[in-house]
Length: 398
Image (cartoon, rainbow, N blue to C red; front, side, top):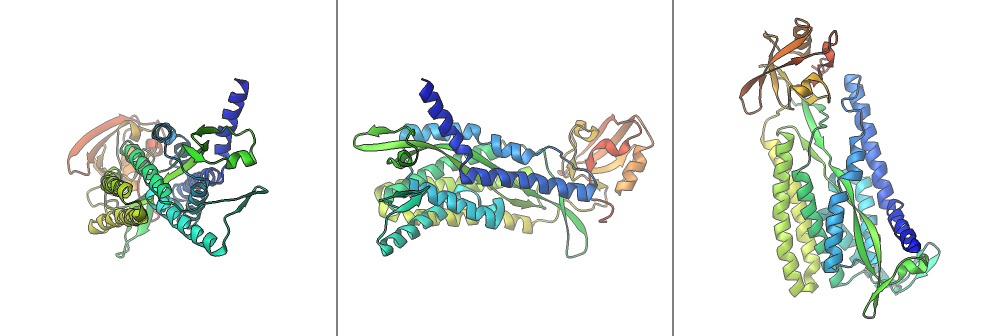
């Protein structure tokens, strides 16, 4: 029993020292530092002090990882060491070149398939099938076969399902605005939605490669074939610029597009089971579908007017600091403060001057994005009207 516990701990520990996980966690830390630095530069204080990007990276994928790993183990979908190498390499390259924009299996898996095909061609040209790994020479690598590509499609399908589920329940409580100047010289707010997380995929790996490097690695056999297991970090990320939609609405529409891609993928998997020789075409179709998802989002953004600019009716709310009176009043991004303590509001200075009228309470008339009005009131911090927690376009930009 003690040896088994030691083995399990070492297998889990290996997950955290894989290059993809290390680069992913470093990237999430960088995202937090960059956001906090930008917020302090704009507002002199961070809107959100906690490193929620790191928290999301580590925690969002735990439940999906358990679900997908269980399904993969039950139905028996092996992924070879060649696939794992190409996946980690392609994901690292895409992350370094484009950030989290294309770190999703509908992009990374097709690129992985391309690398497998290219690597197979290189090995055939050079009449070589070996690889040096940690001082060990590994022979008989096979970078390309139809069953491997089909297995990749199945895993892609499962990751798409958990992505859709995760994004549908993704709470965007930490919206940090960025600002840009329009062609008319006006400043408007925008948001970069960057959900980015990792989930551990318990991968069944055929062969005894790991025992050649780690003699303690557990091996099991089915018939004449030996298998090992590995927790593989699967990175999932998106990057959506939102300036003409409600962020939650924009994400919801992207999820609907992803559902269409998922439906197409189901049909392609069925066809590839019958005609496995054309599996590479399925990867191409899904890759095109992924690009279409981004283009449709971009078209929606460019077809609609800016939503987070200055407003003649009042002061536009672009963010809410947590645990403040604004949060208690349930103000949301996109609301417009029309009056404060019965005084009309046009600028940030008007707002804080109106707050000083009543040192105990503030009374707000709010126009929602849907055009409806509502009234809100709450206690404010005595002698600290600037702690109400409303984030707007800074006066220095206007």
